[in-house]
Structure formats: C-alpha cells, structure tokens
Length: 262
Length: 104
Image (cartoon, rainbow over all chains, first blue to last red; front, side):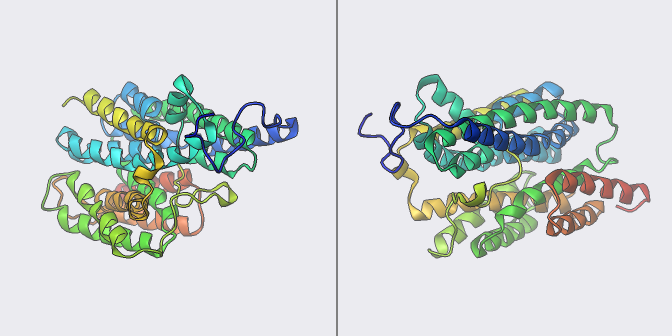
C-alpha cells in the first residue's frame, strides 16, 4: 500500500479483511438490485422525452449508456427541446455542471474501492447517486465495494433497458406537445429538485435561481437563463458559512440531496 | 453543431467530471466554500430548468398554459411523497387533458 492510501478507511488491503459472510452478501446484493429496479425504470420517461426533443433512438441510448447520469440527461434533452441546436452550447454546459456532483462522489468512492487501471475507469463510469449511497451505507469495506458495484451495474442495466423502451414508445406516439411531454419534463425537473430542498441555503438558492431564470428568459436565447440561474449557487454559497449540509451524509443509505435518477 | 456532436461532447464532459473524482487529490476540492457551491449548483440549475420548462414560450416570452397546472399537480404529488415516475406521468397526463379540453 502506498502512503497515499486512505487513512480513515484502513483495511482496504487484500488479506487484511475477512470475506463477506454469504448472508450479508445476499443482503447487499438484494439492496443493490432493489435500488436499481426503483431507479432504472425511470429511464422510460427519459427515453420518451429524448425522442420528443428530436433525438433518435440511438442518440437517446448513447446518453444513457455513456453519459449515464440522470439529471444531466434530462437537462440536455430539455434544453434542446426548447431551443434546438442553437441552444446546444448551453445544453452541454448545463448537463456538465449537473455532473460535477459525481466528481464529489468519486472522491469518496475512490477511497472506498481502491480500484486501479480499467477497473478505476469502470468505477468512474458507475459513480452516480445510487451506487455511492448504497456503497457508503455499508459498515464493512467488502460490503461497501460490493454495494457500489452491484448497484452501479443494476442501475446501468435497467436504466439502459428502460431508456430503449421509452424511446421506442415515444417514437410510436404522436405530437409530443399534445401528449403533454413538455409538462412531463417540467414535472421531472420538479421531482429532481424536490429532495434537494432540505436546507435553508438550498431553498434560498432555488428561489434566487428561479427569479433569475424568470427575469432573463424573455431577454436572452434559450438555454442561457438556466446558466445564469447557476450564479445563485455561487451567491448563496459565498454568503455565509455553517448553515449548510455537507455533500455526502450517509445516514439510511440516502445521500443528502441525491435525486431519484442515476 | 450536429446533434451527435452535442451528445458526444456532453457525454465526454460528464465522464471527465466523474473520472476527476478518482484522479484529483481531495484537497483541491475540499474547501468548505467550494463544497457549498458545488452542492448548491444542482439546486440552482434544476430550479432554473423548472422555471424555463414551465413558463417560457417558444421565444422565451413568459406563457401561462397547461404546463403551470401540470407542475402544480406535480408539487402536490411530491408533498404526498409520490414516486418519481408517478409525478412525471401525471404531469404529462394533466397537461394533455387540459389541452384536450381546449385550454393552454
């Protein structure tokens, strides 16, 4: 083990820890796949919204397969649906910024997993709200690793399968507006935002961001109001210390402010 | 910019952020202030998306239509702790019904 190894997570070295008892193993795998089942099926709504936004089935699938992070995927297709290719730079920027939190999860999970080489690249790909939450919720290191990988794989498989189902269904439908798919996208963003409004800072940020988007929408091209709204996070974040929940709190296996999609 | 280019660019950016967590030393991003801002970032972006998706018309002008009703219902369902898929499907259905009866 190199001296760069994790101090607080000692015992990640091989042979130092006893293998996971089969009862615990089954328990962790069951938890992982039930989280995967609950989350993965939301891919149906993503697939349908993606084709309604003008993507083809392959493009929708590429997003679920390669991007594999729900809020960013919804944001990308939502902004493209509203502003078309002219809004593409804003859509990419918004999707990327929503993906920043996965990097924060990676700081935690990289210590937990100790993966190298190709396994590390795969671990990074599977680093999402759910895999991180299930992983850090386990008390013992082997269960943490099992929970992370199993949940990541479960969500990945089911999210991709349900995206395909959703995009095929979406293609079979007619006019997306008549079907209310634009309102379904709005509903998805509300549902993604909702669990994050747990602190006063979060609520203040949401209100300020909403105000900025509302005022700027008629003045600037589609997609830009959302980027301007991001400034609310900086304003509130710089304002005062100590009244904010940290990015990762593992109680009950739920990430503070994690959203209900990957 | 073709649609494929958009998809690929966004995918690469999102993967690089994920990978950064495994490669960047923790102290680079562990400042309290940085942590606060990065945690609030999704809140701000999602809140902006809600507003735009609910009340912005094709040219960015503000429009009150079936989407506002649908989002109101979605908030009600979230207060009742409804599941994500239920919220999304109901929002779409409500808007479709409101439009079918000729309003919004």
